[in-house]
Length: 276
Image (cartoon, rainbow, N blue to C red; front, side, top):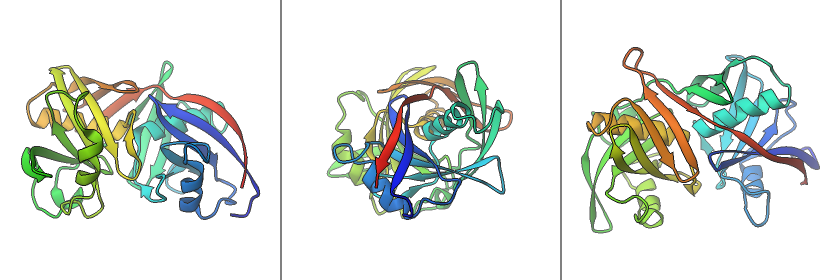
């Protein structure tokens, strides 16, 4: 790290919170170690992830995502919305539509009134591309964990997700099963885990165990993956309201282009400077 002081902005999307820094000057180094320090909730700023804004040769801007354990994430739906708001609020760009490069590819964002809609692209269903140590599509596959049997559906939204339908998501032992499924040998790059309760054809409740971060209040890509899994298992329609502990997201899996669209809020909490 070349700097002794770092300017940051604390943001969140439905309680999924981020430390956002402008890295376009190229001064920020050792970002994995920086994320581990900044994201610690009692000894740092505290966040689910660190987001770094960079210049891009492929899109308007580039977003790097680091987990609290120092690992990188390919994609984060709440993070993309938060970065879009950061870009607008800081006067970096006044464009209503932005193309943002991520490790999962370029995603498109646009403002819809006071919320951000993100074109999350096509869900990936082939096991080797998610990735899993299996072949074909993984839909309602039996999986035993600690003596309990689950049926899993796996989807990539640029990052891996394992979705499990449960009867009562509020009472489910997410902290017990989440980390074990995250690191199950089936998933060579680990996985995010979504526990889903179907309320009706237009609404589901979801709790998320995020790879490298633990349980979070919301996950945009996880909400999209959950809707894809619910549709594949004939549990819901394609336009679904996803209720997360931090709030609601509107998800639509378009039959026309096969893309999943996510719409929701993003908020700035505070900004400041931290001594490194």
